[in-house]
Length: 113
Length: 112
Image 1 (cartoon, chains in turn blue, red):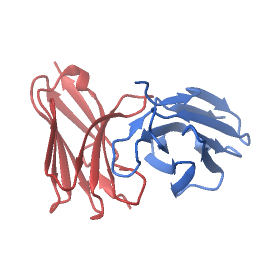
Image 2: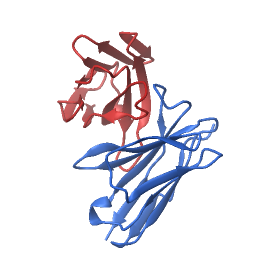
Image 3: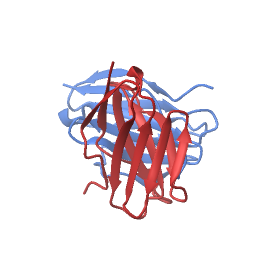
């Protein structure tokens, strides 16, 4: 069965621009979570969606937003990009979200210049 | 406030021996724990998980032990293989949180 697919794999953007990242979860999984990985902060939770509803949000500014579609695919958007937004963005899918195994995609490497 | 801690940034083990990776947590509400293996610029790969109602879970060469009273879990890899060289993260969650809290990771190097 296909794994979690994230597109694009790499992205270079300029400060002030906005970006949209996409995640297709494992078939049948209804929960999609997003994480940011940076060398200084490690893996930090951004938000989680289940059946198109955001159930939890991490401690990130409002420039970070997301949504989930009826087919469980999810997108995250970052507006007014800052240099500090350069990171590996990871998407994880799980069947129920709470206390079940979560499987990650390959990630999108975002570089802001 | 780091709720999940991996105090050893790195660990070096001889091929064929046992690798033991440790993780401590502070939030007593955590009731589900996972271990992931990660290579640079890739997503974490799920290895094994354990619910707080258990104290041990095995899957092939991987065994996770949970000591709730000490708020400590460990991952044992036996025997260690060169392909096990990677960064290992432990993560924790609890009912209603809908998120994983990760440790900072331990870099495991298996020497031939």
